[in-house]
Image (cartoon, rainbow, N blue to C red; front, side, top):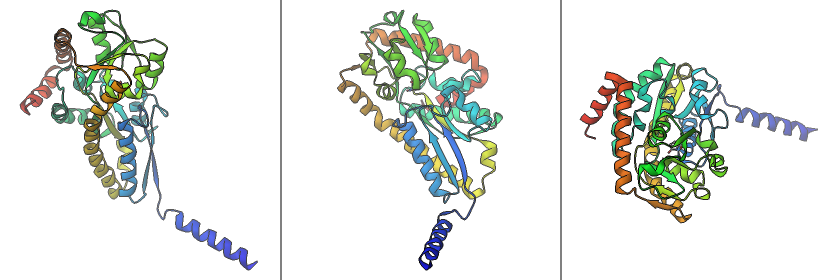
Length: 327
Ligand code: PCA
């Protein structure tokens, strides 16, 4: 009898000790890329940092690989409070505002350094836009430079005519249109399958996504065109953020700052590694030839014109700020 009393007292004690002495807030973070992609790894580190910095008061659960919401639905889910924080590739929302599409205009920023300067110029406008949508920006991280994946030699843009082209946003669909390829919009989570079934046989993206989708199982060439560095942004529902106490808000902000620095470094560090992996799997990983390069430059000029026309004086001001920063 005494033994049981002791045991139950012990159990009750353990429960008391393990139960937080405060209310714990739980946030869901939908994300669209695989769990072992560096963006998602960084999100998990961010969640861990927040938990620690907030002394356990806020627990963020990352749902990678579009498992909670599909990529195009994530932003709305956070706006409507179905999720509290989320990650999307910014350019997915170019239709809402051209400012979301600036980092995917080819050849505006083609290195990590330039991408960082472009982000500094683009950020205030994006923050403002997000604020008008009830959202608050936390940070943004680039993808490695975008190259061209194909199943044959591509020496000129004419060689791209008729390709079954996978697009991930308005910009990549427009490229198909300009070179006479047939665009199909497919998000990363469905890309491996689209490649396997032959629904598409070409696309532009990073070595990271080539690696994530085991692209070597379907395609043979990666041309390292370094055309642009798109970015993912992580943002919160502003009302959910405002509902946190001040120390917890600070924990989110300081962890976001850490995540931003870490993520830029991860993207840079992994770029070469991803390309090496593809080469090791037997892909031809090579720079674009001079004719292809020249053709792409022309496509880029057209897309720059398109963008400036859409974005008007506000967009021009952002580009000017970028150029002033010494691109
Ligand atoms: N990978 C993502 C977006 C940009 C990138 O490099 C994709 O292909 O969907």
